[in-house]
Image (cartoon, rainbow, N blue to C red):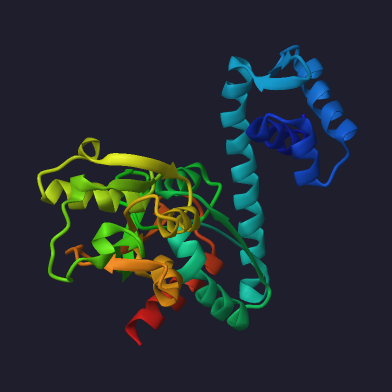
Length: 296
């Protein structure tokens, strides 16, 4: 088997769709189908079940997917190691970050890093806290940046910054027209939540625990997979939500959102790195840059 076959297989397995994988790889659909068929025929194993006009990863495919990802991660690590031999004049840095960090905190720091090291290609992916941790553990990303708590023995973790969280409602919400000193009754309104595994949901759960409540005590109107979706839903009157101040800033500026007084602690931003995988010079340089900036 070839590395190209492995890359194609992983792309198809992650999407469960040949056409979407072909578009992502900039290949023809026939080339992708042929690579998968050749891989299966060469080893006498079906990796996908053909269901109607679609494909579904089967048990053999799921087992092989983990191995294929591992091989590709090791190839990427080898390429990074070779690039490091040339110093920081060239190379590649892979980062995966949770949504708030990727959308608001990370971009100016990436721009600063690129100005200093223009030869380093930077690849950024976005996921929730759990997805980011898994990517770093699996070798799909060298650095992870998350807001949520992670306890994985293979990952090192350090605090690199903080942000503030707030409770927000739409301008037409009953809480928005009460006096600023009126404490909200958290169980008396519908809520708009981020998905399981997100740092934002974790912050809400921690706030509820401190008040003797659980997530199940709330009336959940919507569960949405992104910060912007949550902000827009709250602006439209769907309910209350916990958001980072940076996420809510545009809605507050236009009057579409109102912040409700609620004591919420600062939320730490964590840098994740694998304890044993190869550590590139580019990764070291990026960490040094953000730590230096934090001390300035």
